[in-house]
Length: 267
Ligand SMILES: Nc1ncnc2c1ncn2[C@@H]1O[C@H](COP(=O)(O)OP(=O)(O)OP(=O)(O)O)[C@@H](O)[C@H]1O
Ligand SMILES: Cc1ncc(COP(=O)(O)O)c(N)n1
Image (cartoon, rainbow, N blue to C red; front, side):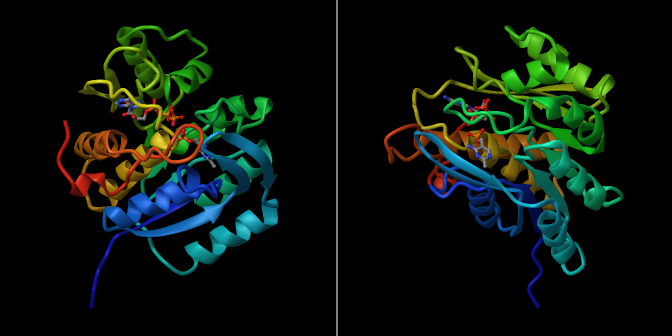
């Protein structure tokens, strides 16, 4: 009998395959984790932007969650796009009390600048979902929304990571520096220690789906039993390789390459 760890992603879709559910499932598969998915919103998007969005009904989201939860155990799960308060409530109802670690990618905007979450639900996310997470993975604009502070320097990023844990109750916070001009440095505060994960910045436009792929890789490594700093370091290597060997396809920001980690180890 073959045993494989399993992970669940609860997120929106990307028919062009670079972000959202599609990026998560490709990443789980690459990292030898059995991938399952609950779709919250169908997003008509591609490398150039978002063309249309349709949210799943609350009852359909709950039913999808019930279908998975009543059947297959998983060792970790993540959320991505949760567009409004009703969707957040449906997810909270079903995930509260689960034993497996919850990795939250607090998706707010696409790389192309399209908003994926209703304005009035950002505070709700911070107050009601964030405290359930074992780890939250904001980029700089998302960390600014969560903390209400301006983030300009690595010190500001570390301060935000600390605040998100100490003040808002996340188990750990990884503030990602993809939006900084210099190094691609991310800071993880796990409640005790500040860890730094840093690489040279890769000169590329192909960053569609980097946040989704990174948080999915962390989730996958957690299903294999890695503790947080190790899981994040391995996921950082994975996303760096995926950006380094990203695909110049489409008319806009191309997608990352989830099988690049097989090609070489990039630090
Ligand atoms: N040009 C780059 N070179 C190297 N690493 C990068 C680059 N851009 C992003 N990263 C890394 O990719 C990961 C995702 O970070 P990022 O801040 O881009 O997330 P995100 O904003 O959620 O994704 P997106 O930009 O796709 O919305 C982080 O580890 C970040 O440091
Ligand atoms: C459905 C969905 N979820 C999330 C993102 C953000 O993608 P990323 O921040 O990884 O580029 C996206 N473009 N679409």
